[in-house]
Length: 379
Image 1 (cartoon, helix red, strand yellow):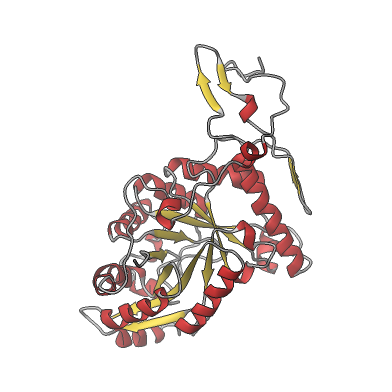
Image 2: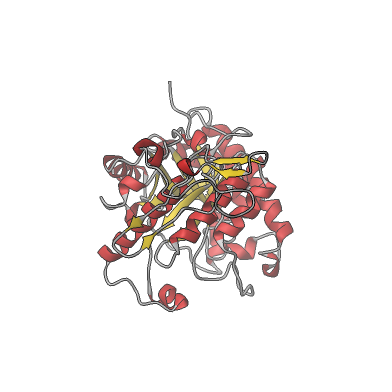
């Protein structure tokens, strides 16, 4: 029996095409308006997308908009206005404070009832470092080493509360069972974290950690649940997927650019009109262009090699509905597709087990003297 595949969507800007904002169904100044963001998020959930990637990085969402939203904060907003779709913000590791990052992501998983993931962005450049007032990483190896430290520390902080550590017993004035509440005591190459985290363990135990294939060195691969791979065609994607699996990554998703015929114009005509404004140059991702049937055929070729696709619509307001509508209807005739159920976690949608708590497995005990009371001081 074939394993169902997932279709997710990249919600970067107004779409993958650099002139996508010109075809958006709103003025550039409305790009960050809460009502418009809510409408888009609810629309992609209703359309049946399994997950949405929420971007982070320098740059503005459209000309005339001199601002952008933090990806984790946008995901938290999305968690409040959706109920099924997985939410996967991109958050960089180079300038992250691991303690705060772990708490932000825990809060996101709690607020979304277990629908959260995290794409660890392993990138550094002059503009990014300058924005934080820090020097660039001294080498690619140093950057990967810092990334490994951050992911390990964040994962450990999520585990500092065992699943039943929160007692909240008013009658006995007990808030936390300190035997199930731990210090991280993490010491890495570039920093250390004492811990514990500020919040109970996330509903998923640990959020689903994603990373781009370029970052999947032997040091990072064991820390990652989902690899996002790239390739200009299905064969190249297959090779990248095999390489990720050889490194032990449990799930593989391929990024694919998509531009579909609409009722008003063919995909070729739409591309010509958009390219007249700004040329959409070929990159590292496969590009599917044409009728819904042609796009569905291309996706079927890709899905033979991966667990899902991260669709990158040329123009979100035009292509997202087409992908989730006629394209998926045709695709589902040959490829079983999975739509998340209400109350399902992102781990469950991906077929990933809930991980055991690292401290519970080791049988560690917290060194605190006794019990935290509801009065706010050790009893």
